[in-house]
Length: 257
DNA sequence: ATGGCCATCATGGATGGA
Image (cartoon, rainbow, N blue to C red):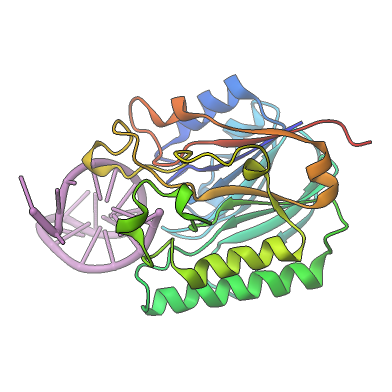
């Protein structure tokens, strides 16, 4: 079983690329972030034509998350950690035997800004929400665009990013609390090397120069970790005409025992 | 060179992203 997370940076602007990729890669589940459209603007038919069921949690212009799955989708939760938040940044479903939480964590803009305070509050709320909704003994995948580099090895220039947004200690502490709660950063379970990135700035030919950040993650509970065979980042999808600035990141699982 | 690009809404240029 394969589950992909991909910040598509506008599902409407990216539709041909997303659909072509999905048709070729055919993961069991695709978790998307940054739809930048309302629910009724989401091109559900294009996914359904490929045999996927879809659950969408969008909003006008910004943010928005969706899950496409070849398996039946049930138990849809819209609005994490707070159902009343006007920003659509989190949803959860049950599909393929997993509780999948798909997140678009706030960017935070700048350390010390109002948006930064919202980001930290949002991450605090996420941990509370998880603790109320489920437990680390369940079959859980928390995936998406976390907008956090967990460690310096996830950053192309740690000195330049020191205590900057994405890399600040309070953000990393929130990430670490998710790990302490009982989740494992699936990629780091297999590979502790530097230079592994999932996002590259559109500006200054950062992708061509190999300068990026690792901010898209698959966090798995112990039972899911036991089945995890690897994590793949599809850098090919960052090349060519009109790419997203994020690459798709795929979690590969064996069968449940 | 302390910026570079890209999407949205709207139809110019502000706002947001990371």
